[in-house]
Picture 1 (tube, helix red, strand yellow):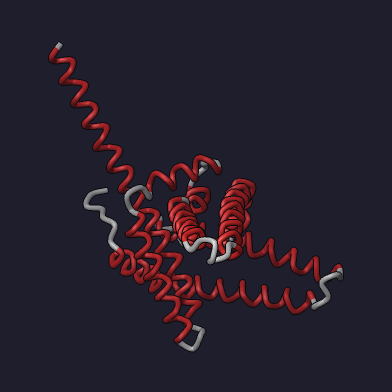
Picture 2: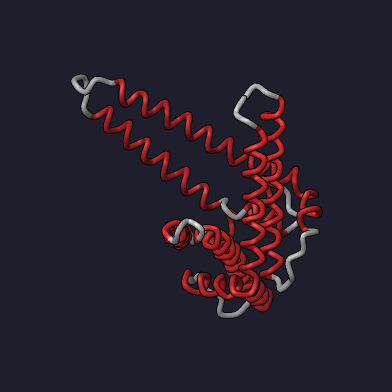
Length: 255
């Protein structure tokens, strides 16, 4: 791809273009999912020990998981110029195990960081200030660093799920590719995610109903960001290959 750049404004414009074409269909599909989820919640009851409650919530979890995968794949297909087809929600289950492994990996990372943060915070709180004013301060500083580090890692692997839906790569390979394509773009992604957050806040203010529109638009924006980063990575790889080839040819000519 030529003249590719990571432009937040371009991503918002492109997502708006896609929303004008497919927004009604995608928002309607998302609303249908929400209605089914609410219905399952209502019929499950409130008795957490009942079989109906367990079955209803299990079905809701499976529905949410499958819908998330299928909806993400639909957006990828729309970006590729395809019309949204509901058959995607059946075919996407071939990637379910890989997707599940990714979610387990992400959850494990969050749990590990959470435990470390809890231990550090607990230690900082329990140390009497009279003993040392430095130790509690150091504890909170470490806690802040852990939170920033976790956010940084989450941003670096944030596209692994899309990569699994978009390719045949396994969990580890998808995480590696996400890590590669986000290198050097963390701050641009932070700004992008903040803009997406602001967009959804505006959606909530628009009589709450607007948030369904902004959620779908946000998914288009993040998917466009993934495609842009992948294009930039491939472009950089091609340049490096050309440089390597030229250097190799020069070395041969010197010999």
